[in-house]
Structures are given as C-alpha cells and as structure tokens.
Amino acid sequence: MARGRVTGIVLDGDRLEWATLVQSGDRVRRVDQGLELLAAEAAPGSDAPAMTRQAIVDRIREACAGMKGDIALGLTSDATLLRVVDLPAVDAEELTEMAALQADKFSPFPIEVMAVSHEVLARSEDGCRVLVAAARDDAVEAQGGLLVEAGVRPTVIDSSALGWWRLLKESGSVPSEGRAALVLMSGDRADLIVVQDAIPLVFRTIDVEPGGAAASVAADIGQALNHTLISMELEHGSQSCSVGLWAYEEQLQPLAAALTGSGSWEVSAHTLDGLPPLCEGIARRLLSDGGIDLTPQTWLDADAARRTRRLVLGGLGSVLGVWLLCVLGMVGLFGWRSRTINRIRAERARWEQPAMEVRELRRRVLTIDRYTDTSHSSLECLREVSGLQPEGIDLVSFSYTKGDAIRVVGQAEERTLIYSFKEALDASGFFPLIELGSHSQDRRGQHWNFEMTLRLSEGDDEEGESS
Image (cartoon, rainbow, N blue to C red; front, side, top):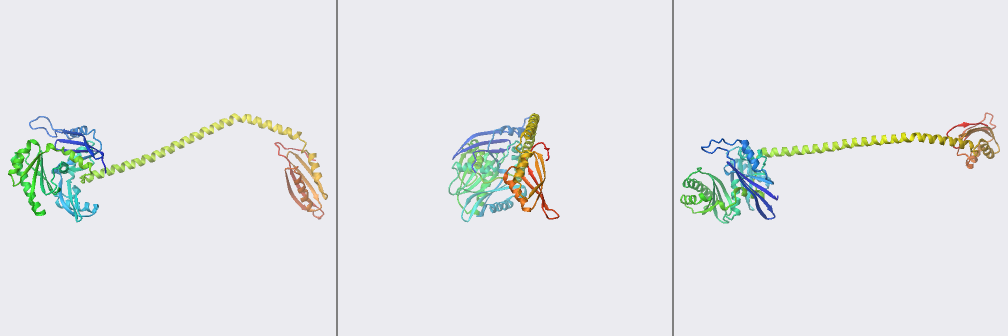
C-alpha cells in the first residue's frame, strides 16, 4: 500500500523525537523533524517538581499538533524481543500461527499479555528466514499510551532496532557477503545485529552501565559479542566475523579502542552523526510497509469497536435522515394539499353565485324554448304517431308529458303489428327513444293489448298535458 506522508516517532525516556517523510514517485524527502525534552523527572539537585503525566501529554499534544498522515512508533529495543528463526515455506496465515508458537517458546512472559508480529527477511524454495517480534502490552502502553492520550494514534508499533537496521542498509554499511557484527551505541543502550550475507541472524540489546567509562562499556559489549558469536558458530558454522561500531562522535574513538582491546577482532568505527535520526528509519520502514506491527490487541479491539460504532451511528443517522425527509415530505404534501383545497374552495365560493345565476337563466331559457318550440308539441307527436300507425292497431290512450315522454296504450289484431308499429316509429327518427312495454292477449283472444313509451328531449321542468 503506497503511503504519501508518514511520520516516525521515538519516545525514549524524556526524549520525544520525530521525523516526517513525503514520498513522490521514487523520491523520498524529509519535510519535518523535531525533538522535544519532556523532563519527566526533576534534574538531580533541582528543586523543580517532576512533570505530571497530564503535563507530559499536553506537551506531546502541542509538539505533534501538525502531524498528518500515518504514524509509526518505534519501541525502544529493551522493550521488544526479537528472534530470527528459519521456518518452512507456508502460506501467510500458517506462518502467523508458527510465529506465535515461536514467540511463546522464547518469551519469558505469557503469550496472552504479549503483542506478537513477524517479518519475512528472506525466502528460498525450502523455507524462509523470519524475524519474530514480541512486546508486552504494558511496555507498549507505557510508551504508546502517552501518544494515544495526546490524540496521536500510531498506525503501527515498530522496533527501534529495526529502524537502525533500515538506516544501516540504506547507507550501504551492511556487507553484502560474509558474517558481520554491527554494534550501535546510542545513549546508555547498545544494539547488536549479526548478519550473514546481508541477512540478519541475531538482534540483541546490550545493557551497559549508564554513564560508565569506555573500558567498562566496551567490556559489556565484548562479553555479549563473544557469547553471540559462539552461538552463531554452533548454529551456523564457524566463520570469520567483522565488527563495525557506530556511536556518536564523543564516544566513538574511546569506545572503538577499548572494544578492539577486549577481543580478537578488529573494529571499524563509524559515527552515528553521519546517519539520519532513528525516527527517520522508523518512518522509512512504514513508508515501505515494514513487516511488524506490535499494536496490542486491546487497541485493535477498541479501534474495531469505534469503527462499528461509527458505522452504526452513520447508518442510524442515514435512517433518521431518510425518515426526517419523509416526514418533511409528508408535511409538505399535506400543506400543499391543504392550500390547494382551500384555493379550490375559494374559487368555488367565488364562482358559485354567478354559476347559480347562469343555471337559473339557462333554466328559464330552456323553459321558454320548450313552450315556444312546437316541433314536438302534442299535436305534432299525435300526427307522427297516427301517420305511422298501421292498419289493425287502435290507440286506446295517448298521454303527453311536455319535454318528457308520451305514453301510448293500444290494441292490435295481431302481435306482429305491434312490432311493426315500433319499427316504424324507430325508423322515423322523430322520437329519441322508444320503449315497448308490456303486451298481452286479452282473455277472449280477440286482440293484443300493449303499452309503448316514446321519449322526447329531456327538460328541466315537467309540465304535462294529456289528450
């Protein structure tokens, strides 16, 4: 995973040191670097009180306020256990399980209180060389907890020893062939790295006497170096080993002379001032996705819980947002409908009286037309019916209702005459609708009685006259 901006942090005692790198293509440049003295303890002979934890956290927060991007914390080498082991070539999941078993073997503490990680140093067809790293959760909390309280959550937890290893590799200080012991002396702690053909075999931290003389410090380093090289010969065979020493300028020459005289080796001395700061090595490992991460499981669980909580709250917020939009939509729709109904009612009230006046006027006009129109008067209707009346049919009754209908009652000598009469009336087109009512034969069987309704044009009023 490519990272554009990363920061490496080392918190060692009362020293907070950081470096920020930015990658652009293949180019990496340092854009920020700083050092903050936290003074967690009062200076000897000073009456000034020690800084409280909250004061330290506030100072860290102020110093790291402008940090952006991913952050890597380099644990001091005395807080981490590093072992190089050879393991079979297996898949990543199985390799993780095997690394945890190896950590359980060499760690003096229960694996349940440890953060364990691993990094593949080299691969071959038969197996792989793996660096197994472990750190107690409380050791991580002691250094990383201050950063977390200050609002600076490290993306990964790395080891300072591996930061030195990265700087030595990139500076070309690691022999490409043969066995070499690399000793780095920074402050009151020495880190020993033994490599074979540029691949690490051992990472070891050497505790030295704080503020001790060069001879005493060299004796401690020489003793640890002897024991380590003997172990390497038993495990990997006998081979000549070169020794390289890196220290700051004021320590370098006295320590190199004392270390040369403490054993049968020649020491090549190098100044640490020529290397970038340790925090930059930590940042460079993160920039290239360094292999180990000693973040405690409790931190990971807390991160997962926060992510889950954010997802739940985000989902709930989305649901509430949709619900609120629906409610607002319903309220808006209800308001729009209410306004529309009120507007229609107002329009209706405004036009109701003129409409009633128009209807009344229309009714009067239709009434006048009805009584002045003689095209369907009773005489015209009687004339039309009589003209179409076939032989053999007698009209018994002719009831005329103006503008509505005519009811005809008659007698026919044969039933077919009734149908012929209706067909003739239908064909005339004078009457809009003709309805044939009941028709039956009288008791004597001499004629057929029938009723027929002739519909006229509809009118508003029903005023009737009969004839």
